[in-house]
Amino acid sequence: MNLIIKVANWEEDKPALQMIRREVFIHEQQVPEEMEWDEFDDSSTHFVCILENKIIATARLKPDGQIGRMAVLQDYRNQGYGNKLLVFVIQTARDKNLKKLYLHAQVNAIPFYEKQGFTVCSDIFYEANIPHREMSKIIC
Image (cartoon, rainbow, N blue to C red):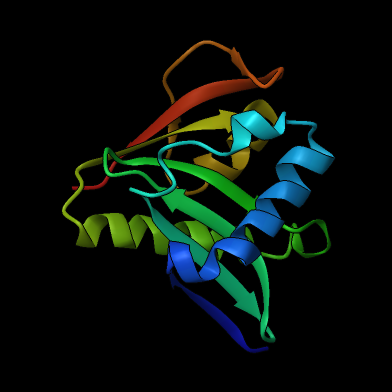
């Protein structure tokens, strides 16, 4: 298995990262396209997970410590790739001297994030008609 997880170059890798986000969020989850693309893409650190030379997952880390836009293509879910990507994102945040991370977890993904030490810190709220809860993790 040839797996590479690395920081992506938003400008160079944009087409592949957008393809994954379009497939997962816009097509599968019916997130309106205008909600998927925002002003934070240009200022965030983006990540890519490549398996056998195919990009299969992505995530981004905003400068304020918010992890978001984490997406794994359907054929590669529940095989540990998302977890490995999340571990890499957390380590990168440590390297950037961030003290706290937070994210808006879809309710069904809460156990996934809990495995990496995130805890729920909000009631349910809706983004793109999908129930979420905020989660956070101290990493200092």
